[in-house]
Length: 459
Image 1: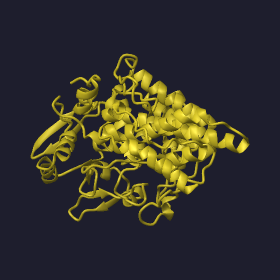
Image 2: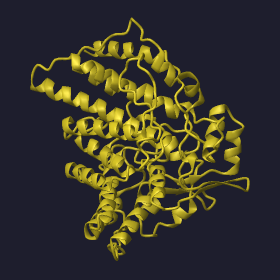
Image 3: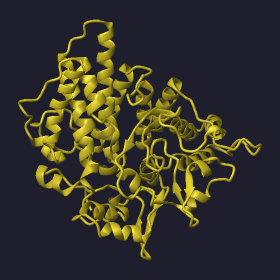
Image 4: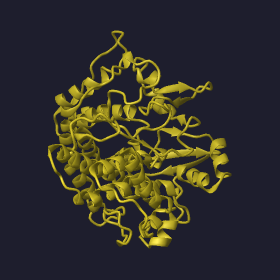
């Protein structure tokens, strides 16, 4: 069976090796010599071994655009004098809005050529495979649910960069390209933001109904992961009723939290808060040379264990991030689904619904695990539901940094009047990104625009 699986992987891989851009991937005809997967085991192998699903294939630009860090003038200038991809990262760092620039191709290409493509391969073949017994029925559902989850997860990540945030104009705003088949002859066009989010939530709801409750492989999605992804997506849509509903469903499936008093050094790979393991592609901005925003660092109480577990000193009075749930690389972002994120989503949604007591119960359930066990812990209280919401958002900011969640938060909260302006200072020049600026939606790579003719985001 191993040989057969390897042949399948090789055959599918030949298709990808011939592709050097998203558009070529969409347009190029498949090789006649490809090996066609013919069993559920083949399809599961494709998802496990070749899809690379969400490991290093989601856009790292989501973290790079946000305000968790900064780089020095020297670092930025060295990038500007480097090869074109480095120069583009440097321009993205200051949210350069010139229509002649474009984001690095990987942020657009990788989700399409890996998780989306391979998920579609599986979903195209799956209806041709018969279910013969209860065991194969379970595997059939698991394979389908996994493929839908991986595709939806990639679509959601792309939407945070290339679409306007979800709002009342979603039915007319430009969405992403919703590639729903592995076929290379279908027309390529952009959906609307409404269609984008409808596809994401529909895929995830189907996945949640058919995925297993547990998995022996931590990088395979489960029912809790699908609920968690739905909670995250609905939060980005500012649909706080559904966000709270799915966060609750997720936590009913799994709710373990790490007591940070027992944590020694960097976080373990697949730690107990991890519901779904994923990490983004990493450029050259968010790395050990990135310096944590000083206002953010100073916002942590000295009895807050996150202040020592999340950061390491640089030796010059500044700090770098060192608390990633990625485990193996503690300074890289992690964008998977975790229980702490779900507690914060449910708490925020309780507060927005006016249920102050439930909101603070969830917040304190998390924060007691983050506070030094030295008698200093005092439960958080709120004067009203709005005060509860503000406290929860403050702790969300401090808990979920380097999770590729701050950028979506900035965009959704600015639609509600948060008035968050981002700034960078390079060589004593200040660059700003005001709330709801057109530059909060990135340009699609110009090669893609030239070859496919899809509409570019406005400037």
